[in-house]
Length: 257
Image 1 (cartoon, helix red, strand yellow):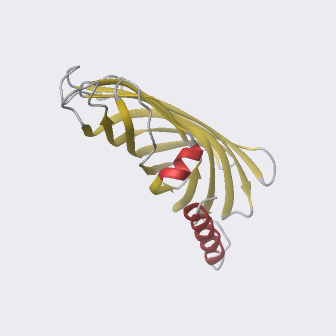
Image 2: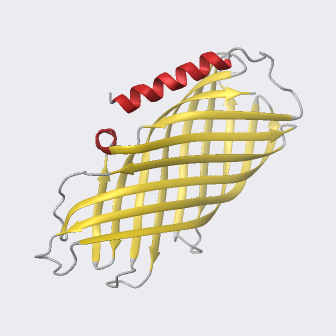
Image 3: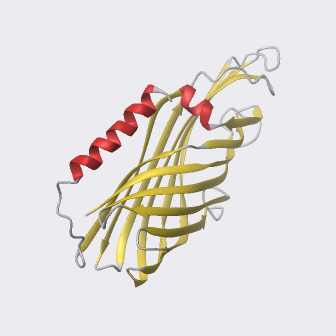
């Protein structure tokens, strides 16, 4: 385990211990909030095209991410009023570098920086014990991909760097169901893009929650997020395409207040 991962886990543990001094009773009306820092043991798979370099394979597993992670941050936030209307915010950021040689299509080395922000308006149906959330909003992608190119394959193009961000509309549902006194199940799915910015984006997730008490819980989940985006004209310097899935298990600490 890397020093960064160890430090992050220690931070979460200390945060949980500090938060334990708060009141123990959960709100039954008015505003209710959820804050969850989490670790997504993600893999990124797919391909990207940058300028004249097309079909660059992107395959970064969790071990590679730990080895090459410069910066990483992941946080989830919810606010809901009277158990009806609310907002959902989620942000994940990874900055990966120095990943070694891939030597395909003229690419010797590729660096990936990926940030994804989700901001949704939510309407809740059902009771606290068994709810269905219908949500809609945006998924903002912020990507920076750099490539070092073999000059014998693409003369005069030693390196390429593309910074691209876009916003996709998204609609989805989320179902929450208690399994037992301490365990809950949550399923989530959404779809978006619709050709407005990306051709397609979607996220699927399945979670179980171990509730220590009404205020604190541990989330264990598996999540996958797809995107298929293209901008510009092929074989021109400004061309960019990004067709990937980011997926993996997730562990988070849930604070409710």
